[in-house]
Image 1 (tube, rainbow, N blue to C red):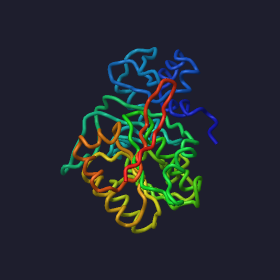
Image 2: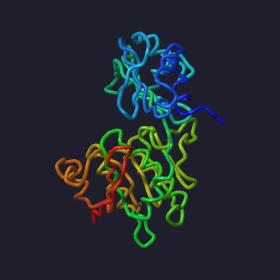
Image 3: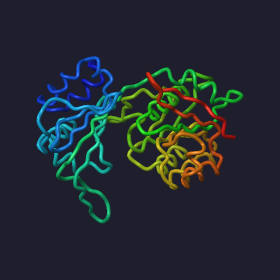
Length: 300
């Protein structure tokens, strides 16, 4: 078992010079580290609760960017980048590296990245306990009602989604449910060599590396979930996918960027989502002084 703190696990893929540069931030601040940003030609920055701050050290070079990828994948950067299709690599512990650079395409499909320009190392930090208060408010007659989680970027949508999946799967508010997770970008469960790196419950099945539509279809056909979860509905294909899943009898749990019903109604994609009347409850996450808070609204 890895006894290191989450930020120490994530920072372990950095070259020694960059790890040393973090020390100036202090242990207390690093315990709240959310991301590390490595941009070619600039010093590394750290995303903390108060915002993005600089670290000590000279500008990042491409060699250091490639070294991070090699450390993360335990292979040469050239070999690793040939396997990258969606712009990220998942690390043991659920941490994730996002990659930017020059895309190489073949037959219209992304086949690799070259000339890396920046990396983002996102620190995975499971937060349990959020579901305990919310789940009873998302139930009716002992049945979980399809729920949409709304929040601005970085406000904790995926973290709350994960804990609600865990709560449903472990039976926090009633009998345990079979939950299917279509983890398109690997952020909910963070599968690493087939094993979820972030705990999502004893009765949860996960598929990743494919679109939400493909993932939900496979789960509905093969795993018979009582509830299905997806992260970040962003386009009409996502709306169609959750609509079809709901038509098969599964309750839905999903997230989207937004601040409330009025905000959703102003945007065509989300207006269509409301028109389908898939979701019965809306959970809105708001940033407040000293942390975040969630409110529940009734949709249908």
